[in-house]
Image (cartoon, rainbow, N blue to C red; front, side, top):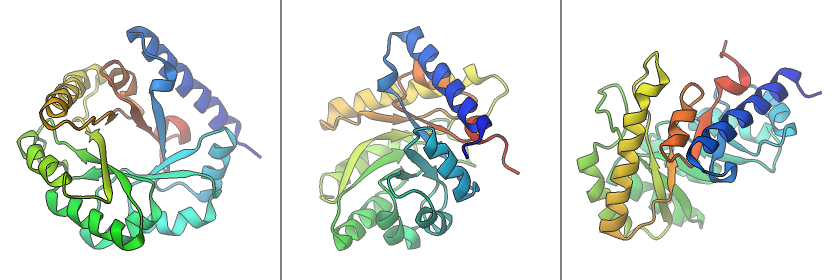
Length: 229
């Protein structure tokens, strides 16, 4: 039976998305929700799927490998956490999109592993806009080299960018980080002729701000499942 709290939380998330879109004249369909299910049981994923949710995000390849076979088989899975090089082959077999490419070497490894398994996988570059030492991601000045390399990678489809802002008590403080990513995207899109249409930014506490700054994918976990135990 579907958890009433999950259903209610999903409705509230959708209301928040609609409100944020209305503030900037965007359509709800412009924003897709990736429900982050790390450390959640397959049973809870199945309950969330009963609400109509189809896209889930995992942080670790090993956890996803154990969980995905136990979940409904019509779901879309995204890797939103850091990808270790030695987990690349498993990642390209498990996931429908990777949000966390943070080096030319990793991009090329994903490309070669995707070629081996006979697929092309959409990927995002993770950009450390704020320069936090504790965060993974490319510094903005490192991104052009990866964009150059992507032209030679036929088994990855570079579709956009991802970032994680510093946590602050006021979600509005994340706005300049999101805006900067969008601005860099526009510059790189013009310089390299790559659409980079996807902007994966915003989580449970700040996704309204991200939507107002152009997010096309938001990543929510706590807002749906509650605080992890």
